[in-house]
Image 1 (cartoon, rainbow, N blue to C red):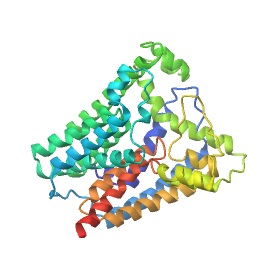
Image 2 (tube, rainbow, N blue to C red):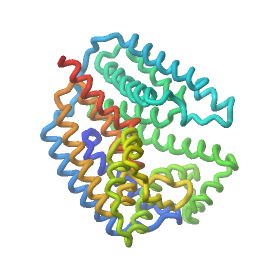
Image 3 (cartoon, rainbow, N blue to C red):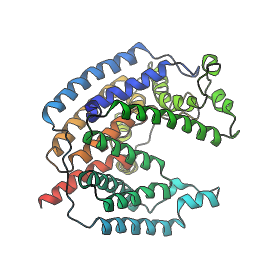
Image 4 (tube, helix red, strand yellow):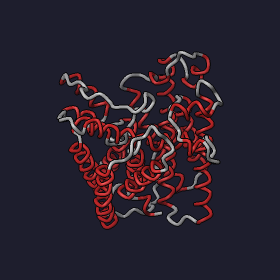
Length: 382
């Protein structure tokens, strides 16, 4: 399972998986993938193999137990007190307000400035406690970790929960390098079951409730899929996995004959974390001049590369990959001697995987967590 412990190999695995799922051709809505896009991915895969081999040579990606020198109980309590302040500011707990007030928008939850800090720190600290539990196997640590895992549920932040669990999975894979065929089978069954339940939940959320044909019609399911024996619930997973690539392909076809030259917007929209770019955009009076190209009003993400394509065309894709390549190498070399190296590696690995959905380098809820392994390493040295 060592291939899942190297961000460069993960880039190849995730985008290869998406291309494979896309090739199933279950939707007439999707454009055909161009040879130029497939060639681009082929070149980046080759470069990623080189980058992966470089990291294999210069990094020791093995599980190193850590010890704790502070009160995890007090820290967990402090996190809950901070969220309690946000609950008071918000006028209630989001998971409860959603059920009692149909007009409530959980997206607006949190105290400005405070919320992104506590959100990223609590996510990072939850992962830290899991690392500590894997190292010491103390039940108390597990209990505090579970308490912190409740927070994403309370604030109804599904992305936060998914990112934490995915980071935990990477830590688990580092500790357990040799995964038996039986466990791999269970993981595969779990994924298939999860995709099926995801489809069931998706059907329930539609206006027509359990009418599976509603979503399939909206996303133009092919007759070959509609008439197959494959459970129709899996169409939801197919769309969510493959549609970002379809949007990217559609965007590239729309800008192919245009001279996209919005370098300022490229930096703000594809490189800098959103909490920085939003403030700089207002200070510099820079507006997003490139509107999104959408296959469908419900499909609004286009992988890591979609924004770069809108701003700078093919040059934007090349520039963004180069940025990602050197970011991975420099960041991991920077923290390689840190006791929190595996935490940074796990968070970065999650970012690379979810780049297949949207640009995680600009999503401060995840990318800002990369700062904590550096900050806590500096604190240990002081």
